[in-house]
Length: 565
Image (cartoon, rainbow, N blue to C red; front, side, top):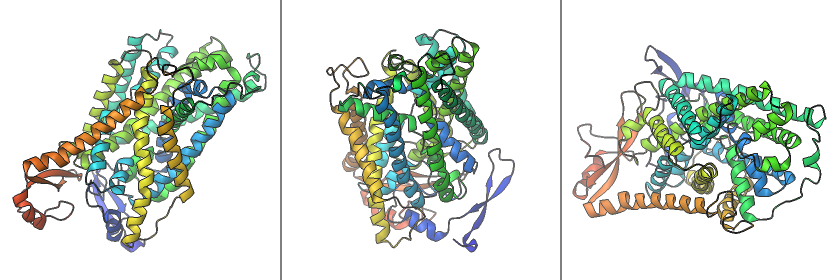
């Protein structure tokens, strides 16, 4: 786009003390194609009411901070249990990287079509599936509300903090620390976007340095220069014990995906990035590749220092076993456990920042009650209500479930419905391409290869189907003490709730009440915009359509909107 198309707009900074000049690189033609053929959903906020605090460094570190959290420190044991051998366990970390890279290409292509939408998946599903109207936004919004908790990461963080402090990891000690630390993180995010991003960036650097230290230490262990007696034991006959059970292999892939989860985090704040397409196209793949290299060498270090059986039973504390095996019961164990706790803290921070934008976008679509409140950035220029929702649900899930299998169950439960939407989003990219071609939209800066999309679809299907295959040993021989596929059933139940919510609110109630659902564009004083779904009586429908455009903006400003649905 030429410099003539650039428009300088003034926005108020997060303290409201002064205005800053930003460059809006979106021409009217760009916006027309971005919103063409899909008029339902959240309106485009041409200038971000949350500001522009995300630069290329923050893009890299937001992704890294979400990826490097609890996964690489907590999941190696469960992955080894699932696949049966050291060799296949290491291969799965490579497979996870390839799948994450394929999925990242899907996000990159969507981002070139809709560069002014934060929330990533919620926005892309809305654009990919405009019909049935409001179905995907409603389903995804219900899912986001029901599963918008970060309890598993908070619990692992609490355990490492207690280990670092030399305290016993009792159930209520873990829960108390988890709630306390999570509360502090949410308060930081509520008070300042700028400072929450700065803290996230700083901890992201600490994360990278921690894994570099573990990786280098692992190489030293392999060289025979530590107290570990036989560092090559796990690599002899590395594929002994390999499992061919479909359930175990699918579980392993889910856990690896959990560890790589976060490569898409920067897309959640895309409308807060200057030159978003160029920035994410270049730096999102860099962040994923850096994490893969660190993950690979960290797992090599684990297998060099810890006996295979100890890793299998390590649950969420694999890294602590590594520190103890290499350094003994010294102060180094405490210090390095503290570093892992810091890493987990940064993961929670980066996750909350990204997911708050997802929830905000769900609210801006109008399918949640009171869209003005979800979209509002007052009083601290942050998405207050999404942060409060995250806090409430996380505290409930940390405190309420019984101790024991809750960690693995919650991780799997959050993953299964998300994989359904991931499959739909990948498939939807073909529909978006077809729709853009039909309206003569220009080519964009990035387009994923079809073979990459087919691979991503195949892996998503694999993850969704194979968990139903019973594990070796029977239906109670999974990684939880109850029925192995419980998380699949509960996940499908949540999706059924999503469908019922849509049928009841969008189809049945309007039919029974003799009204139609229409959009009404809300413009807030802070610059935020949202769509409110309103009830228009059938007798007034023609007048409504004549006085509002397709986005719900009033053509005749004297027209008053009906009551909200």
